[in-house]
Length: 97
Image (cartoon, rainbow, N blue to C red; front, top):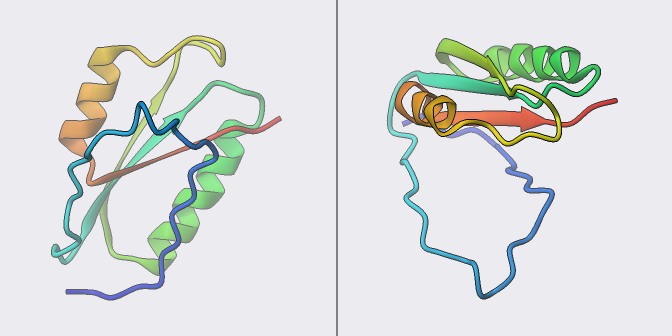
């Protein structure tokens, strides 16, 4: 297993009433499949490209799947989220202006 110093940041905290158990995937693969979810805000694509390139330089990434929401104020469609869940080991999404 590859040990890397990775810090996960979540910009929002769930209220105690909504916290549910989550399924975590163990990083026991040699390579990872990276998912990128662009929230359609200005410059989000540039920020996510830099994050993606940085991750690819740091950890072994086998593939990258990039998807974009229909708009910054609209939620990602269930089919899009299902595709990311199926095709990626982890997903990065970001906001930018």
